Image 1 (spheres, one colour):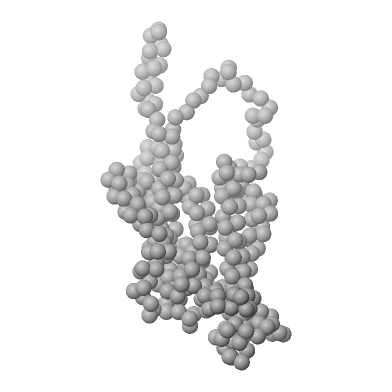
Image 2: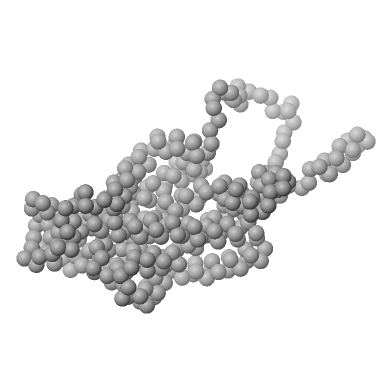
Length: 329
């Protein structure tokens, strides 16, 4: 090795330190990689971001279009139930018990003589509200815990990871059943929301931690630190925005599971009281009519299934759009 090559190697060691995990790069010599037509870039096309590319993909995905339409309809019904049902869901008449459908009451009446259609429409507000609020709290709380653990590492990561493991070992429904036994007299929706948040933030924390661990070792974070940015500024300004894709996918797919969890708890009689209209409560009440009048059970069950399916399909479509490696087409 001549003197000039040794000098170049010495300069490389000074100005180019060993890369962090995930920053290893191999650059082939130029003479071994001749530029081909397939590698050329059309400079007239404006640059697009990952989110723009994802939206472009979603607009062409029939699965996303169908699920988005269903989700929008469900949200509109939940926000404005009076526009879709004129009957009072709590106005019951025993003389109409288990009567079939008729004009003005297309779904018939339940065992207590309540209009099934009105209860299905108004039950959407309760179930969707619990699902949305739980998803928001889980995303914020679990995402913050996971981001702090992944970014700071060391003993902070060790402590938060062990706490996460403890909650991960507790099944959400089982933990909610035990905890809600203490608040059976409460009629507030927040008891369900906070209980599901307490046992549901674990998966979000693990996903966020993994995304932050991957993003914090990339070049943009190293460059930002070299320019004098503080660690917290890097975390909230650079790393978290670049870690949102798996978080959004997880939140979208989890929303349906929280709606099912609320319905399960109400079905078991430890969720919302009978004075609150919900799909789970109506399914629980109608189970005794399964053999004699199954339509009373079918309508709230179908509404629940369609809603959950819409959000799960939307989550699958968003996952394919934001993660090119998971695209099926």
